[in-house]
Length: 510
Image (cartoon, rainbow, N blue to C red; front, side):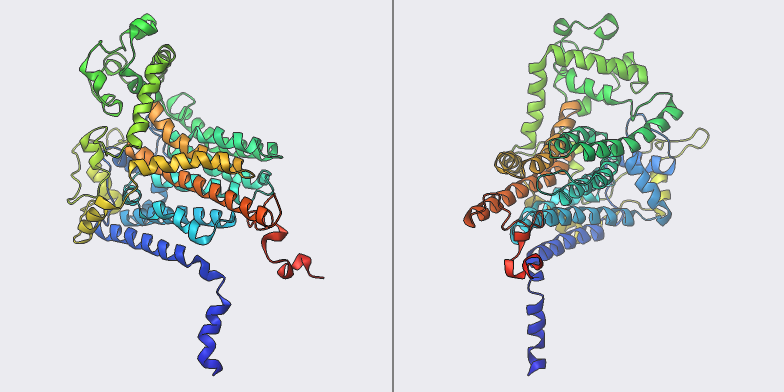
């Protein structure tokens, strides 16, 4: 008889761990979808231009004027494997790890395991999230580094105080490197720094965080100076900002100096109606006619000065342009923006990628190459783009129906704002996460243009902010039920004595 009941006794002994079963099942489903993507596109998906850029600079490292190379550093570290499949498998593992970190933080915050698992579903099952992970692009590494930094900062805080300085130090290094992966992460650093200063005893961890975040940025700027003669991460922000302002900039209103007057588009010009993300690549626009190369330090400074003048002279037009971008992110209609060709790259394809015949990025004088040659060399394959059926058709069909639509994305951000206001006792932590999400959404739109790949990386942090708000409400309600207004009677966030039954708490046993 004892042997007959042994399995049931074993299950009963592990009953506390079974509460994680909903998330484990959700995680397994997300992993299965990602494995299907690997089977369908074993060498990953290529984003025209950017993927070629990152591969080229991974093979021939040198500071680039247009983009930071944090992602290329990862590709170079993986290059000895000579496997594009290994790159996308690692990126999918990062995507799953982001969901695991969010779930762990929410459980530690006191949210029920089933509710924590529910919050992670958009991270695990959104088809555009999975497709972005499969692209040879920087976004997945970018999200993973930010998620790691926030997890460290949220995990070790106690009683509303800031986390230990050594935890903040590690988080600062991660977030500093995230800026090198995508320079759009730069505004997240001051957002997190401010939230640390708002917490009790936060000056020491804030100092450690800020100093650590500056280390990778300073090292990169020194490298950039050694190669290009100027201290910077890139010299391309000017042309992107010019594109953002070109549609409304009116020289009659902003009155630029004579050397910048030619940068205004003619009133009523057709170019004013083009998407900024597409306009800046045209060869006949004023910056490329007057200031070529537009990524030189001098041209970059001129374009930045012109754009700032336009924003200060026409703030209403600028806010309207940014608002249109945010509206596209939350719209029920998916726009073919900035061009139909670009938007198509965010969908699982039914045919292999066609590589252009142009020269490779970071090409060396005397040793010309092509982007196709770079792709073949990196992956040691004659076919760096493959589509395998029936797996590809399964993902194409899945993507038609299973994704987070624009209104739902807007609702998540709106609930995050409510969570900040309602999360009494955890408001600073919730503000830090929600502020990160809003910054990741708004900054690219405000400094360049709207693009769907700028929206997807912000969603996981907006979901996490909602979960933190719900955990704070639950802890407060439970605290009121037990007559403890501070909610410590049930909190697992700080590991307070009331987290378990008093008779089972070692601290309460003689």
